[in-house]
Amino acid sequence: MANYVTNTSDKEKSKALIRCIIGGWFGLHLFYVGRIGRGLLFACTLGLMGFGWISDIISILNGSFRDNVGAPLRE
Image 1 (cartoon, one colour):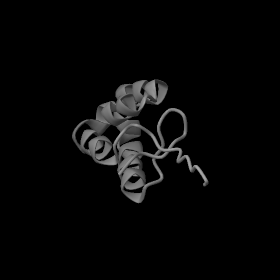
Image 2 (cartoon, rainbow, N blue to C red):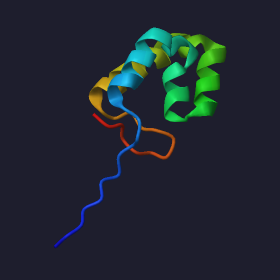
Image 3 (cartoon, helix red, strand yellow):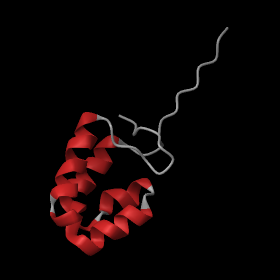
């Protein structure tokens, strides 16, 4: 019998999306998934002047957003 191990994050996609929509300008979604450095960058530049914030919303909806170890978020 085969044992399959999926490499997914312990963070949820829906929670990350809500945090991104509400506080994405300040990097709340990035702090949630453990990407502290990028979260600080977002906090100092107001979501990379909005472009990074919109890009992250799209990537979360798209399913290509990753956590701090590179694992995709759970559904």
